[in-house]
Length: 431
Image (cartoon, rainbow, N blue to C red):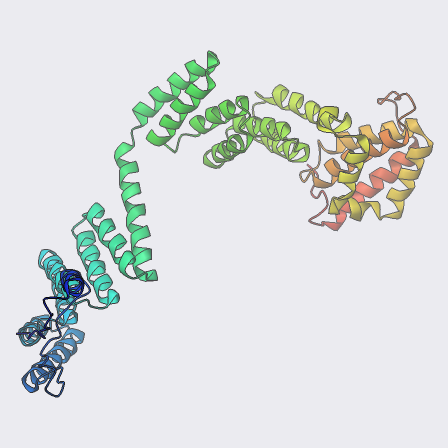
């Protein structure tokens, strides 16, 4: 048993007596184990105790060796002997808990770790040891499929001492819990009802309410592309363009053959003034539209893109000079503009407005035939802005007149050259 060091306090010194009483009642005061009176030479550990501690450590090491050999029953015997010799070393208990865990005796493993934590608190053991005990409690609860208890144990372990191993287990357990909850909530029938209710709210212009119902439908069945498409339409009405674009992309990801997903995404990209991306999306949707059911809608959106690219939006500060500047910043346009033939065409556009109009119209037609629209679209964008900047004072010409033979021949030769090279940056593989 521990021996206390007696301190004599003069009765007259009330303040000192009060302070010592406070110090004794708080967690800061602790008797020194096996201490002797101050008049004797200090001996912190007696001879008998050192022998017990040494024997306990030897037994623990034997238990560790048998644990490594997976001789768990023998290891458990040595850990029990070690604990009888030294009931302050909680490492013995955490090692014993590891044996019980391997024996799939999870309840007893948890009890052993709880005892280790209690003793460790009492003797102010290292926080790392307390953390280890909580971690093993979490592992045992996880094996018992007690996810909430496992999460709590892992969180307490990280509070005592933060380790990447326990943090990873905590995140995995939380993810598993969320997945279980999601699976329990899954119900396609209720998802359809929520989606239909969302459709009614959308027709009544109650877009926030429709978003709520579509979200409920997605929670019930996150594999139905229609709910994402409908929610994207609501977000577009609410001008939540980022959320709308994410839903449209998810819709296409779930069902690439759903043409409405492409038109929905293109409408959002037009609202974001991403006209090049919108044209590419519409072209892909046109390829998916085998029966031509959405052809008219797609063509109308394409026309809307071309008009937006041609006529600057003064409300957004988009002057023709700014359009020209943005087009010039595109690497693909920079590469093509460096070509001597293209430079000659631009010079002729400045000198002959009629040829410029015809060339712009011709580039429009190219975007309908190239599978990769990057070059055609950007050239069209650049050419329209270039023409309006250089010929702003002149009336537009009839865009449907035939261009000069030389200009058209140069443009066609340029297209054939780009196609034959097979460059990734150019519009390759004509349809």
